Length: 255
Image (cartoon, rainbow, N blue to C red):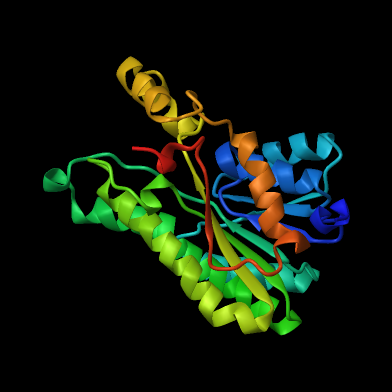
């Protein structure tokens, strides 16, 4: 098998929430495989700084500053890309937040905010990207799930529901868009070393729990998700759709 199957040269990838964290790792991985990448975020300064850093590494990088929870901004961003002649071949729905609070104390507004950012945004951005992919007869959508796409943990109910929804949204996309040349899949990261997890990493009890619960006995690194993302974005996965691949050090496989 030729490694050309994994070559993304000539492809353009939009990664939401990609100025830092997992999104930045996905962007760097896809760029390293040859893709032009479009970084997204809501902070223009941070976005420009991230783009400059990646361009300094020799990568082809654009930016698109929009809020994934604002449908008008999403529509405007895609209209602008259309005007510029930029075709999104690969979409990575990565933008997300965490919010920890017991359900009995959870305000409806906080519940809704987590679902809007982590789930509804993937539908709206995915829909707009897929409209254009369908017209061209090809495209890749990669949604970012979680271990909580399968398993629940106390105090993160809205996140768990949103990531469970990502799993089923991915299957719905595969069911509806497969005959249009679009493959939709998801990645389920385990516990990763990110800013969002900093408090957990610095909590000795939680750190010990993660390492004890994970067969590989460590937290994952963001760059260790890049290979799975490249595979799902490339021709190597052209007959794979509706799946979620867990990159979790084996955690979900053991009791």
